[in-house]
Length: 463
Ligand SMILES: [Zn+2]
Image 1 (cartoon, helix red, strand yellow):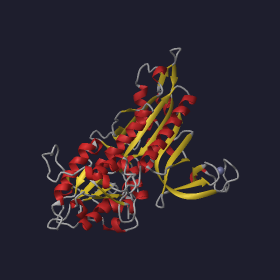
Image 2: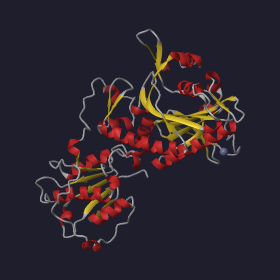
Image 3: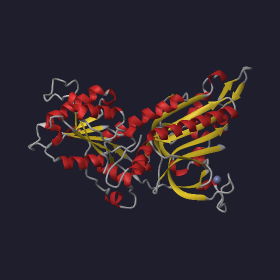
Image 4: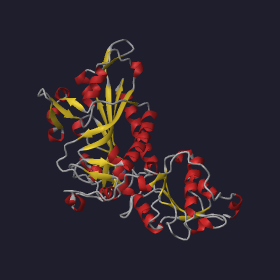
């Protein structure tokens, strides 16, 4: 299993501070940091108790048996349902239970940092879109059955938007006297999107309702638009590196979004539905769709051979040029006060899909492993079993939770106490293994020694 360390309390703190990258050492020096046995009135905020979490592992799956056991499932879906993270509703739709919402909110914060780091400004556009906009771009017909359509009480056609090129371009077109000095303009949102999948499957990996980050860029020239495109790709790479995910950027088809240049960000995985070709010799990688079938060698270095692998698409970037800005007349005024049509790009990230895909690629068959930044809770402390001969260690456990939070403010709201003390440590450890808390601290027998020691288990995989 994962590395286990015996640490006294000051060392537990130091250990957390240093992201737990420490060697097992002699702890004799810790005798000078005696641990107070009685818990002082330190209850600044209530301890987060595992017994109170709404993370039901015993929800009935009415009518879902086939989806649970059949070919439609994958590791992340199974683990997430078993751990009480998601619950299937109607096909392709899920309840995101509280721990998942915590994780999504953490992912949103990291995405916000990266998007705002390159000048992105966050907005929120209606999900309910008028058909007129989509008819203007001709995508009302082009999108086919994947576009979720509905009529309002006035018999007017609408769709629940899967993407917002039409909407955002209309917004910018309505902006009178947008100056060249205000460009590049990068607008993004993180909202629920809809796609009428014929066969939703693999849990959050291919649903009909999901969270997506979509960003749209407006530039003064083609050259400037390419620079913006490149800076977004770099931000995506930084994001995946921070999450500890081995993402590959591959050349891609522009599909029904249109445009001239496109890349996908793919997470290699056996259940991936995209086929990728990666050169063993140079940096070339592409989606199979973009390569003619008779091509065996690498088009970039000419000498390398292309190896096929499967991937889960977690991000997509498109250089759009004037495709939408021309149609909707999204212009800016140049230095000579003349109106000029803007150059556009659009950039998507599947938010709920990144979450499920990271669980898919990092987890074992038995337990969830999270990117460290996305784990719903960082630390779980296990006090001894009630009625055991080390029962008095329970006070130490409670004390440790408060010490951790006081000393390491970034752990505020992140440390759980597994108070289900009617269960053995072993049983609760097994649960902790399934849920994948990055750090588990066991308060066992050695906690009652003269120099109290706590057992630390590191389950972290990401950064
Ligand atoms: Zn090559």
